[in-house]
Length: 152
Image (cartoon, rainbow, N blue to C red):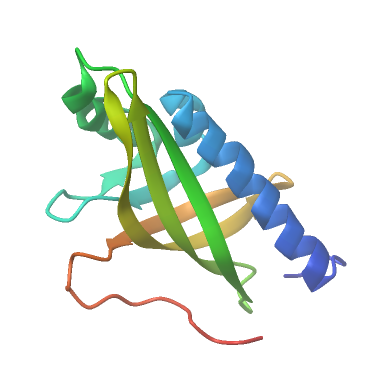
């Protein structure tokens, strides 16, 4: 990145960004979550579903996806860990994290599923991090994945 931030500061900033972004998603603030993406952002989260594009499209996709929980409210928690971060010459960041989703409810035993790898391209926009693209690869889906896995 062209900023004077150290890699450690950048790494911590990305972790904080994810903490805020995932809290929005888990609290059902789909509009807030979608606006953590760029205006042309792309979100691919479930095998077999096409990518959602733009914040408006991401909101629609999340509302449609969560309809399966209607009548049986659940609390979902997205846990991101094992962050690998790469700075690119074009001022983008490539991020790869392991993700687990915990789903619980009043009448269900908490379930940990799915287990995923999340590949993001992050950018700074008006001094804030935003997601340009997110591709979620589910561990049960054996379709080949791509994404950064290098040491810096």
